[in-house]
Image (cartoon, rainbow, N blue to C red; front, side, top):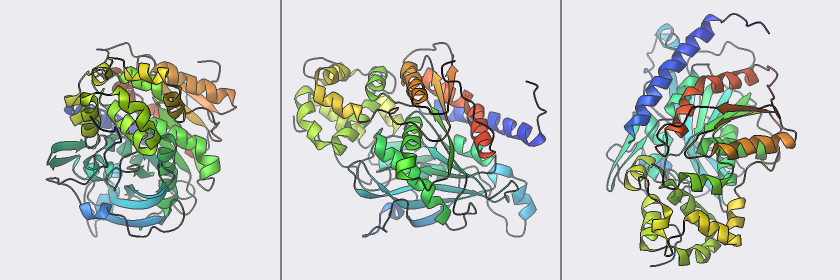
Length: 458
């Protein structure tokens, strides 16, 4: 099949993507005896915490899922300020000419309760020149942490959000993906998920809560003041790691939970479809502490798990759960660097071993399994075979499961060889190297190009 000529806009977009990937690399390298019921996350003082009052929901939430509650503008890191009377300058700045707002909207949380969730809405100032209204790209962020200071809607203002008591920092690395999509002219909405910034614990890797947060921000985006996407924008979902799992689950639940969202395609990078396999792979890695996030989330959503797990954990394990409930990923990586869950249990058994020996715990973990419902719209799964956090075999199994159910799946295998296993390089690098392909896949779905399908051939 002959290659078509590259247009000037595509060349500019590719150059921008490369520059953003370089910035992503720089950001990534800068991150260097009672019951086990997870502690509730509480707001903490931050030295540069933006608008803490915004994250308090109203006493009564509006009816309906995905209902817009409120917004407030903030200066997006890297973007140029709007210059009154100088539209030509603003329009010539491309993705850097963007207005940003924090938003709050309604959703359904991990205990099937009505919740307020926050996020970010990014509106390009350059007019949309393509067909129809401006498309919407919804981004589900990768692991941020479990503390309120980790919320992307906070870190997008200064790239970092410092907390002084106790010390901590959230880093807005997902701004790279946001700018790559803005460069295509799309409006971008990124959820904070349940409990990041807002009251309550962040429902980390909880399949339904994360899917709801993604689908509901797509619903709420049209109501954001100044949005020009119209009431039924062509919408795409994208995310990597935790975000990959969130958008994969959202694509599955879309037909039953939010059929009103005009979803045309989803890109799921390294999605943790099998939670147990992922926790076992992360155990002993540079970010082993994320297991604390996952256990906290499950204990918060399913309190009946507490008597099943409590007898297994020692004081060090209980301390790990309490500490990680209020940390960002950088803090967790430093404190629990290459720790193994064997050190957190009374018998020396790993968390994976304990789960496999307890059928009831396995049942809880299986509730988070992705791949049992066929998405009704095209999906792309990026699977790094040597991923040292989210195993490649389980994301490839996700693709096979979806294919068997009749979904339109493009499976993309990343063959980067092992580099310092356990140091998260083989997990993080494909997110950056695969960014261009991800954005192009989403652009093709928005443009109505037939989706590639390679079921049975990868």
